[in-house]
Image (cartoon, rainbow, N blue to C red):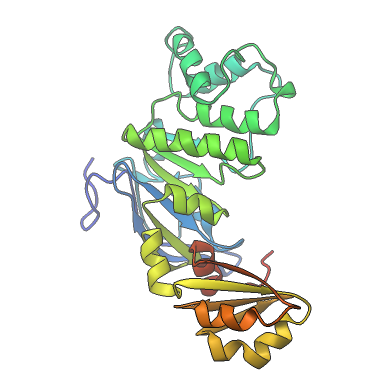
Length: 312
C-alpha cells in the first residue's frame, strides 16, 4: 500500500499534523515527526503533555480527530492491525498474565501474531537470555521481581521479530543495575537495525539512547533534534547548583552578577554560565553555601522549556 502524498517513504513511523481532543480539550495539537530506520527516537514531555495519547494514535488504538499516521508502511487506524504485526510494544505498566509461567506468557503472546508454539518454543531460551532471564522458563510470574517482569516484557515484545519497538517508559521503577541492563540490550537492538520509539522521564536515559528526540508540551512540539544539539542551542555550557538556606537570598542579591540566568527551586539556585570560574571563585568565599559544578544536560533543557512546576 502506498503512503499518502507528502509522507516520507520507508519510515517505520510517520506522524503528520496529528490532533486529538477529549471533552473539548486538545491534548494533541498538530504533532509532526518521523522515525529513521535504525534509530532510537525519544518522545519526552511532562505528565499530561500528550505522549500516551500520541502513542495510542500511532498504534491505531485511538482514532485521531485529524492528521495522518503511517505505521510500518500502513495507514493507522485503518490498517493498524496488520501494521502491528511488525511492531513490538513495551507498555508503561506490565500486563503479564500472572497465571502463566514465563515461557507460557511468551507462547500465548506469540499466538496473537499467528506464531505456532512449535516455532516459538526453540526461540524462547535466546529471548530469555537476551533479557537476563536464562533458565526461568518454568518460573511463575508471581514470584518474579519488578525488574524481572520488566525485562520479560521486553523479551515478549521481540517474539515477532519486529522492525519497530515502541517503549513507553521501559525502565520506570527499576534499580540502577536493571536500568543499565535494559540500556545495554536496547543498544544491541539498535545495532541489529531495529528502530525504537522511546518515551521516558529519565533525561539521562534519553541522552544515552536517542539519536534524536522531541520535547512536547500541551500537545505541541517544543523542540526537536539530537540531544547534544538541543543542549547547545538552548542552555549555557555550564551549570553551578548552589545549595543552602540562604541560596535563594544569595541568588536575588548576587546571582545576576555572575550568571546569564538563575532559577531558584526550593533551597537550590541553578546558575547557568558559559564560564564558571568567576562564579566559583566568588562562592568559595561563601561558607554557608554548597555548590555542584557540572556541564549542562538534557534535563536543563527540559526544565527550561517546560517549566519546573509540578504536573498532575
